[in-house]
Image (cartoon, rainbow, N blue to C red; front, side):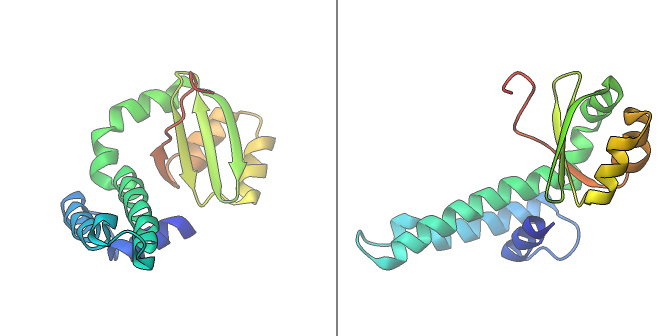
Length: 148
């Protein structure tokens, strides 16, 4: 959640993420912080390189959790969650779930208590369908089962 809030602050996103507005803000930030604007050896150039990487990462992250992106990928997501859970891991407040079909999704804000309940659930898929999938912000992970 900290990462989401940090990127939203960087892009000036208050509530809902709109892809068109995000893209415009992204382009303006990249123009402002592009390393080629600064001469070699200038200390601002190094700062610009770090900032431009942060801007690019933030844009890709926010675009992946935008409602428009989720809506466009809704059918594939619903197929994945009905295929069954193959593997999962929890790190901080992020639950990463790999499904039987090979897709991997990250769920943000999942507390350790909820993760413990998931581990102890008699029916893992049933618990996740009721308590995780509908209640947490998610995005498709870059990792897939083939890469793991």
